[in-house]
Image (cartoon, rainbow, N blue to C red):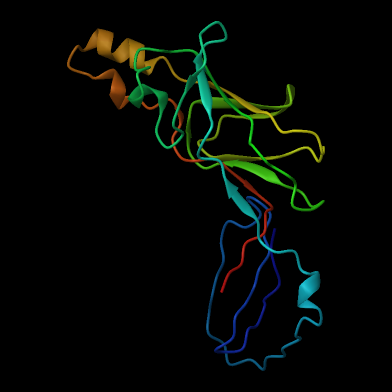
Amino acid sequence: MAMSPVFVPANTAFTLFLMPRQLSTFELSVTTAATHCFPVKNKASLPAPYKKMLENGWIFQAGPESRPVPIAVECGWEQQGFEHFSGIGIYTLHPSNFKRPYKESLYLVLPKIAGTVKLFVNTAQIGKSTENSVSFLLPSSKKYLKITLHIHNTIANILYPEMDSSLDPKRFSSGLLETPYIWNGIATIK
């Protein structure tokens, strides 16, 4: 999507509201064109940026029949005792005391993933992705929020070490690799 030029006077701040993946490049240049500044009349009407990190409370199952165990989401399951597991890793979170801050859209952002992912919210499938980072629009339900991620890793952690015993299965990342968060899609650029 092409945008028309936006002129911002020198020594001022420019705020740009973006939806996830809305803008891939942004070109800044100095110009001598005459600029016109139209101030926002009611700044209180603009929604504030919202971001809730989901670093704690996750449980993990190495397949649907395994016993759930607590897991960190800053590094893959291969670093947390599951280096020989290949299949569908199931991450589940019941965010405690989560209340939607307002009626606007919220997104679950998975900043770094190793594998393919399916997202379920309150048992309903919301979406799936093969990307290594993704955001999903969350349903606007006022019910409790139960997030379940099914992440299918590659079989590299099993095959490659069998072909070359010097390879450590922990070299092959699987699952969530950075902390997920809930975001309203609004970012401030200054």
